[in-house]
Image (tube, rainbow over all chains, first blue to last red; front, top):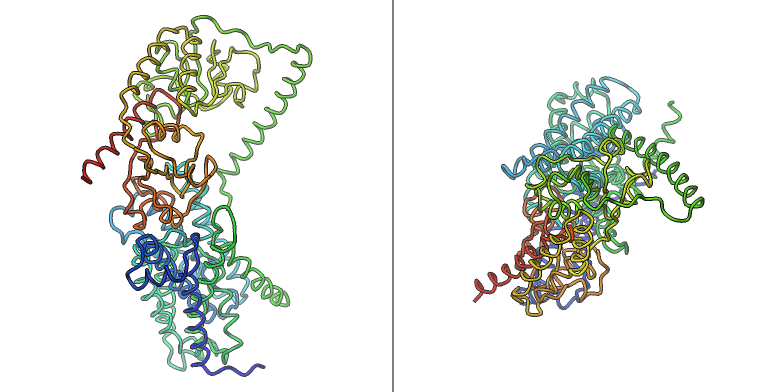
Length: 332
Length: 295
């Protein structure tokens, strides 16, 4: 067994990685801008073009990648801890697709024009509904596979709902829109999007981090956790609300980016003492770094039109998913 | 992620494909038997005209009598796409189904091209066809107007329409003065040279950014690249002024707020049609208005 690295060192180095990724994301893009031009723009006396590209395009995108990645990583770690299932995460459980369905409904039926808050609210509402449905479907089932199958059902249902909503809406470009929502993208995001997502992510993240000690107690089983003074109902409520609000806000602006919440906790866990609370914060920071790097990747890979983020995260995440499924085979 | 509706459509289109394949084998057989096409010649004054394409809808509506028109495409009544949506109200609309065409038994089928239509594949060589080429330049528009006018039995109307358009364009102000414009569509698609829109830009004295950057007729330009290219004007479609999806949302990104915009209804630019003069004039007037406000 590996010895855990000190928590401060782990968090510090992950944060450093995230900062480096964010800076790299400011330096590279579709247009080659020299470092001196960017520095001039950053200090406020650069040319107009460079400062628009830096402050209106690259900066909101980098900040959104950090925030969305942090939320997805944290949600994955919290769900894996609470459900004691190594495959739990927002996209596998269908939460992301459900949130995307809410966002699609808000955008395509004109509800988002009533008030800017409608978009995240509908996404959060649908995410909450999907989690409720999931918990209802799985009940007290012991097998981790039941949860994954229920998640698959919820995700497929929500994905079909997105296709249906887009096909019903008078939008001739539905196919491309469906792809963006199901694979996720941070292309062309602005500060408006950041202001939609960030409050949700802060609230959702805080609710999930609050659960740390309860998650540790839950590793001993529900009865033992209750005996230790954990209020299971409140823990579950915080988990549901935190995941729905945070993931809902993130998906409302970035689409359903898959697998970040799955990969990151697995990468982080061996570096810690493996208690659920110990991986929460590092998973958030690690998720921020991973998504920012993935978003840098889609911009640097030379394709005629930009790759969707979900493509990159799926290539990274599916192997992790498969390895864990193979381990589960012993239980089948 | 395939819902029931689209898989149904897939099956339907497969079926159509089989029908079309069978039909095309029949066509090949017919052609090898007699090398000349057996398409009947149209009557001088057709009474049941069917249009297979939004663009030919515009021409038929402009040139034929209302009672001659037996069928138009579904989009003919959509004011967002059809410049003659009002005129098309009340006329029979087709859904690209062979049955409807068989029931009408047209004596002229107009398309762009008409012969490639899947709906006609079940009954090849049965109806007189008018195949028009896609008009990407003004002279091509004049040519298709002339062809259609003759086919529907009113050549004089065609000549009059062309004369009117030429007169409209004769005093078109050249307000562009060599400035650069980009026709920027949803999701960052930019219209290039050799297109109708490029022809309009040139006519009002604008330079197409796509030509300057050496891009193909349709290319994708990211927001960053657009900001870096700094065109003098962005020409956008009117439908994109409302944000109802992510594709149109991108055109409202704050990074583009510095570049003056010219808004043109899609119905005027989607087809090479008599609406060309309206579009060109509207672009010229909007540039003049911008210059006036800036002064």
